[in-house]
Image (cartoon, rainbow, N blue to C red):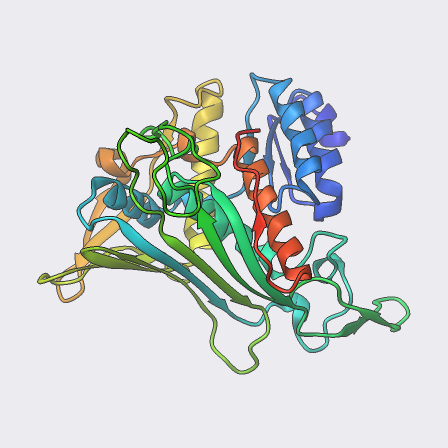
Length: 366
C-alpha cells in the first residue's frame, strides 16, 4: 500500500509468494503503477487472466513478467540464428536442470515453495522459464503436455512447531511438450511474425489444405530435479537443427554454435543467465522504457555480447552498436505471455497428477 501511494514510485516489482501475487499486482496497476511480476504469474490460469484484465484496463502502464532470459544477449543471438534458417529447421529442444534447491535441502523447513497449493515446486521455479523461452525462440504455442512429477521429499518440519508436514509440490518434473504446427502470434520482439494460427494441429498434418505446409514442430523435453546430493549444478539447453546444433549454458550465459564442417563459435558469457546477465538487462530495458514514456516499440537497452570461436581470441561488441543484438522492451514478456505460460503450467501439473497422460493446452490468445 505504501509503494502504491508513493508518487516517487513508478514501477512495482511483485516478488511475493505466488499465492499473493494476483492481488498485489492488480492493486499496483489500479494505483497507476507499472508492474513487473515474478513467475509463476499466479496460482492458476484463471487468476492470471484476472491480472491480464487489470493490465488491459490500464493500457498506458507496463505490465510485464520477469522472464529475464529473453534479455540475455546469447538468447537474442540464438533467436536470430534460428530465424535466419542457417541451421535449418529445429528438430528438438532439450532442457536439463539438475541441482540442489534450497527449499529441498537437508535441514530446510516447510514453506510455500514445497506446496502445490502455494504455487511452489521446481516447475514453477524453473520450468516456467523454459516454457517461455521455448515460445520466444520458436514463435509457437504449446498445445499439449505429458509430465511425470515426484516431490522427492515426503515431508518437512513446520518452522514453528517442528511437526512433519507433507510436501505436495514437485521436486522433480519430466515433461514433454507438443507445439503448434503452424506459427502463432507470440511476443517475440520486433521480428515477431503473425502467420495462420493452428493451435490444435499436433499430428504433423497440414494446417491449411491447399496452402503452404508449415515447418515441422520441434519436440520439446524438460527435465528438472531439485535434489541431486553431491552433484555439481547443471542447467542447460540443447537445440538440435537440421544442419547444426546449439548448446546454451544457463550458469555462464554462454551459447556454443556447432555447424557442420566449421569451428564451433561461442557467444555470450558474463555469468548466471538469471542473476548476472538477464536481470540487469531487463532492468536496463525497463528504465529505458519509462524514460521513453512506456513506449514498448522504440525503447531498447544496451548490454555486452561476447563472440569468439572456441579456439580463437575473444571478441566483444557493444549491443547498442550491433543492431542484430539490441534488447528491446518489445522482446520482453507481457501479461499475455504470462497467461499462456500459466496455462502450460496448469496442464503440466494436471498431467503429473494423472501419471503422465497427455493434457491439451488452450493455445488461443487470451
